[in-house]
Amino acid sequence: MNSRTESDDADLSEDRVFESAAELFSILATPVRLKIISAVCQEEKNVSQLLDVIDTTQPNMSQHLGTLYRSGILAKRREGTQIYYRLQSERVATLCRAVCTQVAIELDASDEVDPGERLLPAAHR
Image (cartoon, rainbow, N blue to C red):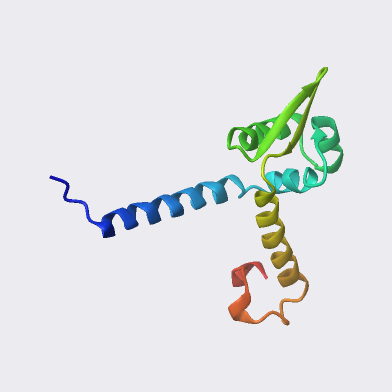
């Protein structure tokens, strides 16, 4: 006998949504990873090209690229000795762009943004 109800199924489904969203946000919660996503938005880049535009060490860059690749955010291809990275999904770039744009607006003009429309906590303004 199955004692689960439709309400239980809806709760489980909702839990999966929130857990998946939290996992995605935890992956994106590192500034270097957001910079990598921004850097490969328009075209693929290899590690050297990424290091030219992102101030970090090569080992640190490789660690973040690996995390983004394993999570499915980035795809990669090999050309000779170089590995090129690109976005696997444009939706991640759209999400990052929307959040970063809103944060930039709030940082530039904190007095002009309605408090009910803010993303940033007061301590970061």
